Image (tube, rainbow, N blue to C red; front, side, top):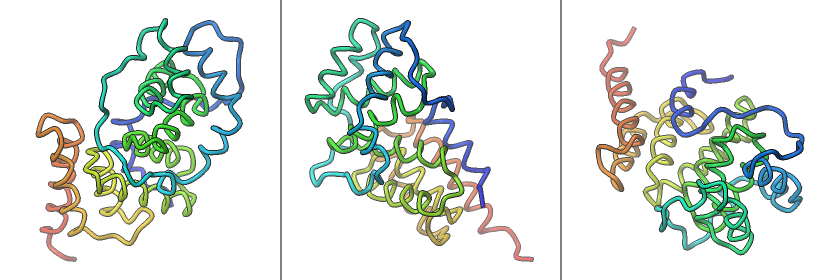
Length: 217
């Protein structure tokens, strides 16, 4: 059964996803990158795997550099860096191609590659994209929750927030409100109270606490 309540969190970390997957004649650098990603058969195949299975032992909870891929003239070089194993550029390139509102599989494999290279935000975003695409598939739901759990172990803020939400709703895991409250505490560990992931976690904690405090029927 689909959980509509998940949408308010997913929209905070995902931009709108176009349903079409076909490559088109590129008119912008973002479209050119998207088409090249669509043509990368190995990346497309990797994107179908559960992100939790790709997380390396030495993963990083935070990106070690800022966004070098937002300028149109840098996108192609970012793609080449991604191919060469730069997880940061894979992640930021995915973000910027996603902003251009291209087909999901023109950027989702970039999140997955970032994940496989140890960038936890890539794992979190790919898991969220999988849930958006197949919210009623139980195997996907379990994979997504497992991914959030593993990424949260590194204190990736959004991973902890989404893991806490799934625990509270029983998405891909038995519901556990008490564990959810503890997990959500970790959402604020990295960047403090001003982080949107932390803000969302605090709001969710309040909802859970209100539910626990409500009189039983």
